[in-house]
Image 1 (spheres, rainbow, N blue to C red):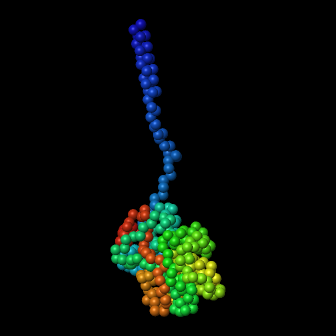
Image 2: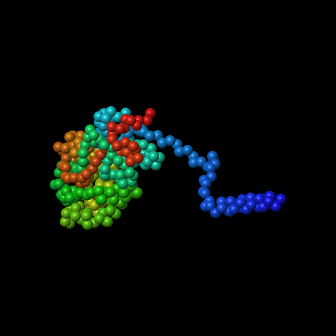
Image 3: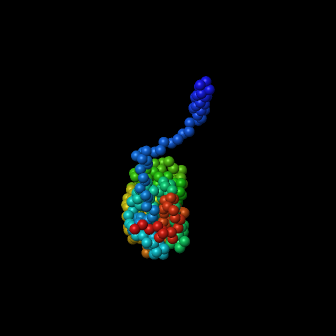
Length: 311
Ligand code: PBE
């Protein structure tokens, strides 16, 4: 009897000890099994591949280069037409949804600062090499508006400058107000482009400029307009198609434009109109065109596009 009592006490003690020891152990954090209804909703599968090449305005040189690329690389994708603004809107949507997209792209453009993008390698060099952006005038401008011409002979800027203006334009599309702000913030640089007593010959004379609504052209053209207006010129700046712009300068219907892409992108226009215009100078160097995809798109070369075609 006594023995069995002792035995019982021993068992109880052991049990207590065991509970005590267990209680000292750091509590293991066991994740509760997720309740089925608490599970993450399944992400819809992102389709990996392309349905089209998102193009821009049909008059852009990059559109004819891309038609050539479609032939040279036998690309099984249609090239769509649109505009620079529509193309960046589509880029934005696709990137927001991690979808694959391939666009006609170029530098300088704010899209390259806004998103992680890459140019696809172009082993056949369909898109050519480095381009420069030129200021093209009608013949006779040097005689008719010498002061304006003297300014255009100096006007040249780089990534830093055009990048700031494009960024301002991306955030707020009051292009003229942005150009005026930039001009005030960069008065030393602007002064350096201007002949002495700039504006002396202005007297409200009209200056006609055209542009195509590419971001780089908007930035450059509005800065030039702001500078001329500030000096007392009346500036008429209108948006047109690239072909219209080249032919208008050749016909002497406008004074100048600042968004010619040479030697490759506007080569066909140069062949047609080169003899009848005055190429003043490069206003930007180191431009590039090509096919552009977001960095997460898992190809690096145009030749890989056909491996990723969606029906
Ligand atoms: N771009 C921008 C133009 C020139 C400026 C490359 C779209 C073009 O392709 O003609």
